[in-house]
Image 1 (cartoon, helix red, strand yellow):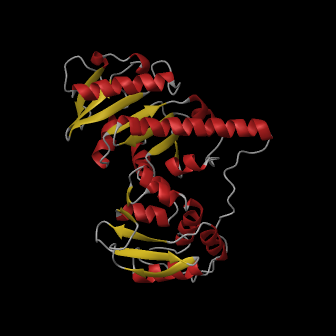
Image 2 (cartoon, one colour):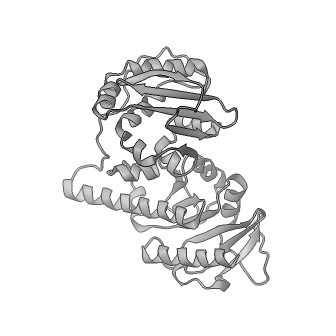
Image 3 (cartoon, rainbow, N blue to C red):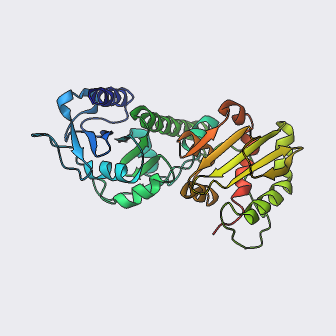
Amino acid sequence: MENLIDQIIETGKLIWDKDLSGGLSGNLSARGTQETVFITGRATCLGMLKKEDIGSVDLEGKSLENNFIPSTETVFHVAVYKNFDAKAVVHVHPTFTNGYFSVNEKISFDTFETRLTLGNIPVIEQKTPTITDIASVVEALKQSNIVVLKNHGVVAIGVTLKDAFFLVQTLEEAVKIACLKTLFTKNDVGGVKTGLSVQDIGQSGKKFAIFSEDQVKEIVNIVNGDEKFKKLACETALETKLAVVLDETGQTYCFNFSGGGIKDYSNSVAEAEFVISGKLEYWRAIFNRKLDPFAATIQKKLKLKGDFAKISKWYVPFNRLFDLWTAVPVE
């Protein structure tokens, strides 16, 4: 437990050094046991934390130590641990991020690395100095490990405090790039222009059960009929086998990419070079365009088996592929 306290102090110093929170703002926590949480105290400075500024609470937010008053955001922190397997929560008030989202509802990223890390970030309205609409934030965290609280700040969750810290820092850097781009071009901020938006793909209007044979057949037909995907796959020499797995049932589809399309598919991971697996709620979010599949693997909402460096060289055709997948309506 002493190690966790040291990690909280170290993360608070990193946040302070990177100007991600100032004064007495921001709060951090880390899961101690299944039933306890270590959290920063009320009115503490993240850049100047001492061991006595950190204490433990139960999953109802009640302090387990005499004379320790936990953060005013304790109710939110324990709500995260009740709903997720996360081990750490970072809540900060970054200057550029707060400024940007005070006048914008979303951001388009200008580097591929940022999009890979962050995906589609939910932006939630907040009307109070503390997080009182907790349910909406928890729901948003199911889509992304980082959520913007409009006119308030940012929350991020992770397996470790550093995981959550890196998400917050990456977002702040992305917002700085967006602001600089606006200054340099005197135009509206935009994202990487890939020309990959899915338009007029001809659908029957039918909705398909997720991971059903009918859904997969429809996906294969759309992918193999898409000239943009074929061009991108040929340009990048896309030759591999990618399997997707639904955790709850073990249902598996392994796609054989060859010759600019999907040559065939099987129901086994035996020959797959890459395997992506996850829970139904995350696959549903992906097919409903609420969760970016690349970001989901980095944020560990989906599990990837295989060489990420190798699969990332096919980022552009796979990005198109996932766009095409979401053109198939699901129930």
